[in-house]
Image 1 (spheres, rainbow, N blue to C red):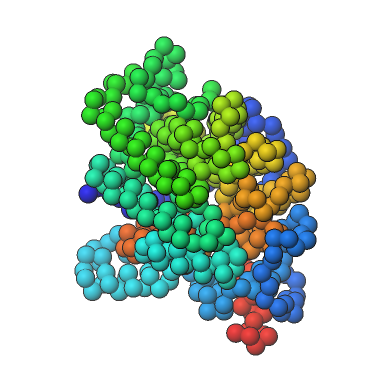
Image 2: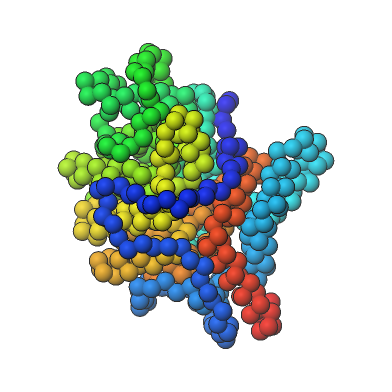
Length: 500
């Protein structure tokens, strides 16, 4: 079966934004710029507080306090703190990341002895830090242990990326169903959702074909697709359409059958989530595939998002795309018109290099914002818009996936202004497991629901994912440096206090 787990082309150089003049989406209102900063926490370490897990009904002000590392990491054992500090420091050293990625893709992995040594080292360090286990049951146990120790919830993520044939798609669907079963076995307080990748249950080649046809339909108003289900808008006037320069061939009868089978798979997964009261987050991809993914996510939401209090299907919006704000507004408007509760996961985005390369190869400008400042502005504008929607009882759910402390502070302030109930699950934050723990703990202490995105799968199939985490951590200078600094301070404090 042709399934690719945690795709190997994630090994990329960190994206560098130029200093060009920001040009934002025309329909997104400009707001005060929010810039990532390396926070300075050079104050003397306070006396050790009692181990304390904040309760949702405790009084909190709207600011996110990341200044007290003793309280932030009070639930983390010293042994875990030592390993986390070592792993994050190693991941932040460029030459070490390059060496590790070279070793894991070299002929050393063809030799049984060296392969076993490398995998053993990876498992006891990077794998245990960034991954939740080798199967759904192990991951569910990790979710429980993390919640019981820290109060942070878990998002269960079966670590499969792409499938190229029907048999692989069927196999992956069963793994996703098993993931839902594992989530269902947990107390609802312990987990927030499961995550699915459409690329794992619909062949990549078909998603490209469907995206091409959807783009052509948008460009050519008299062009109709007989197989198209009811959905929400997936394009705006500023969306990149350069991927499709000529009229695509219609889907063959076999391709239509494959598309129908993909719809059945995602609907089976959604139905299982609906029956189990488990929210489903649909992950995003590159723009060459995203139209088909948005189309399938929205068509599924129309069928399964019936509960006004809690949407089942959440689609992902990537704020680093210049058309993100416009597309979000169009989708929300249509959802409100059709009276469909809708969930959205808001992220910045992870495919900057591949988007730039593809656009350049086709003679077009990258669909990604010109500056990181513009990306921050877009994220914060979309975040504010979604929080306002979620606060007015319209049935919207929001997952704010961010490693940016300034976005966290802005969201916390906005939640206070809107009188948002932090306990009802309509708004929650999420960070990757093993990263941005200080922000996760700070948001949790402020009374928010906070989840960790927790992938699982066999060690050797997780290697590309681990390399990606290492590259991202090296590029995330503000958040990564803050976490490492706070961890060093806490280890020093424990050592001096004799608590290690």
